[in-house]
Image 1 (cartoon, rainbow, N blue to C red):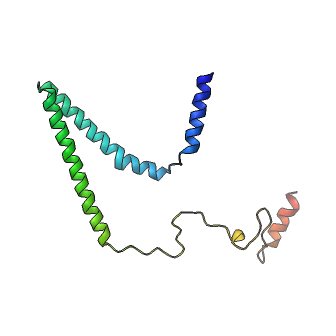
Image 2: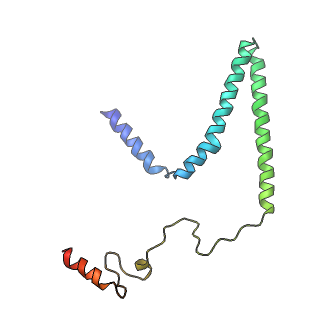
Image 3: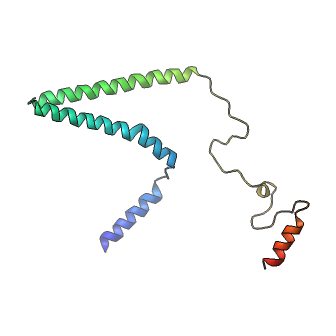
Length: 139
């Protein structure tokens, strides 16, 4: 019983503490990070197993694998440096009119007009017959 309560406590605590991840952020993580890391890991394991089957010493295997990882890290670092230089040379694009960088949902017209929440918005001209019918038969 205590284990279940601890599990629920930590689950609720973790869920309430960490921010939500949007679906597009999760997909970007998967395609840009997790899949390349898994392919590199697969190649690393295949290389180590092949070198072990060829009776290489552990020190030689560690040197080959460490050298390969070091070369990949250096290439990644150099590519990031060139990417930053090319981004600095570009002019920033202007934001379109009415663009909200936070991505909030636009408010309805009644909220913009200052109508309090839970009250009926003023009727548009010509919309009275339909609204009167709803008011009469919805009670």
